Image (cartoon, rainbow, N blue to C red; front, side):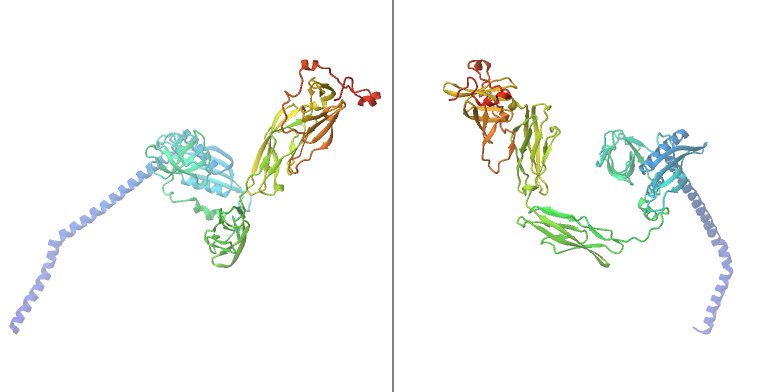
Amino acid sequence: MDDKQRTKVLAMVLAGVLALGVLRPLVDDVVMGPVRDAQRKLDNATAEFEREESKHMQLLVAKEHISQGRAASLPPRISDAQWLYQIWITNLAQQCKFAQLQVNPGRTDNRRNQYLTVNVDVEAETDLAGLSRFLYLFEQAGLMHRVASLDIQSTGSQGNPRMEIVLTAEGMSVVGCPDRNDVFVRSELPQPVSATDTELTVKSAEGFPKQTPFLAQLGKEMVKVTGVDSQNRGKWTVERGQEGTTAAEHAVAENVQLFPIAFGRRDVIFSDYENFLNSSPFAKPTPPREFRPRIASVTDKTIAPGESVKMTARAEDINEDIGIPVFALENAPEGMAINSETGELEWTAGDDTEPKKYEGTIILTQKNNEDLRVEKTLAITVKLPNDAPEITLPEDAIAVLGREFILTVAAQDDGPKDSLKYSLEGDDIPEGLAVDENDGVLKWTAPRTFTPGEYPVNVKVTDGGEPAMSAVGTLTLKVTDDTAALTRFTGAVGLDGQPVAWFWNQAENKKPELRVGNRIVAAEIDAELTEIAKRHILMKDVEGVWKLKLGQNLRERELIEPAAKPAAAPAATDIVKAPVDTETLVASDDDKLAESPTVVAQKPPADKAADYDKDPPGATEE
């Protein structure tokens, strides 16, 4: 390009620049002005919309607050509001274990067409935990109320002192709230509930939430409803004893009342108050705690071969802020093991394990604390199973009025015999009857005023095994008059070539005639006649051979030849194990006795006692 052409191009560019500078204001006014004006209007409209939307949201929030406030209001009538609020406060205070409780209505304030307030005054005695629980639940409740005033007087300064409180609770009802017959919806139990039931049914579930979980007050107990039956909304699955209460029995018609949680309080739990409770402002600071670590829940055991032992060692009074406890075993029998973290200990004795005592040492240490070492010896005794003892008693025994009754109870056991213990069981034990605890000897002297008859007596024997085993035997005690003292040997005669002994039973006015081989039975005496002579008879029983002289009663007989008793036989005195029925052996028919002469030996006067051994009139001896 030559210089002439270059000059022409530069001139054109310069003219264009000058033209742009002259036309730019015109372009801004004509083209960009309307655009900027439209943008300003758009910005203004957007800002106005945002302001209106904010007002709308504020209106919605206000409506929601008003709705929540009305839902959480007390009933609209001031009398209903105060009475029902007073009942609710009383129930809550009792649930928190307030003592010396007094709840009274306080002042009221009714702002017509706006709201009304009612006060309830509370005076009580409690501790810091009880007061904290009350305030916690008070604040949790979905109710428009507040603590208007609270005065606390501590009665001590050590530990957990009791406190006397004066509290004013103020509840509110706003205009437009629904009419209701209680603070919160209420129902009742149609059937009783035990302390262990995890399901309950309410009479009506109307007004209760359909979604779970929710809380309800069951009398003075708080329960958490975790499930609602889809077919029957009144049938609930519950967790018992919530919010510091204890599961208890509840009768038919017990109140069940909803306990709604206030908005914004659903994530608050009572344990959030723990630091406040542990550092009570009403108690003096205590010195640093001195820990004394020990092993607990470990006790010696006795088992049989083939049985197992399970227990869990527990570390007590240990500062777990330093580190977790660690368990171990030393010098333990083969097969015994312990979980180092949980302390669970287990050992199974084999079927062939030798019966004896086995010992092991449990060691407690602590992570991050090499100075801690606690030992505890555990003894496990392997012992053969303990069988119940066997008791031996006669089916019945005779006790004579006015005479001492003695019977030794026989018992056998697989353990030491001297470890057996005897006792009487039942409510109808004859007064005065007793058994020696150690040797099993029954003793009793029946009073002469005691009513004769049959009395069952239960004797119990218990061994010294682990566990102790027992056996019970029953003895029928036949209490009778002393007919032996009233039955005399009155004479002997020969009839049909055989000697016959005559007796006189004064108690029943009977005169039996007995021959050799017959038995004489009176009171506890049961003996067989072995010899009949003119002046005496011989009779034999389990104790030996007895001699009874003419004119003597059966009590006056003399033992002339004691029987040899086996060493293992139980000793017995004044008893007959199995009395023989002598209805057919003892002649007592008055017509039969009349067929033969009766010789009665009357006791002679003292001055003729020397002649008493002479044969009585009519007596003969074969």
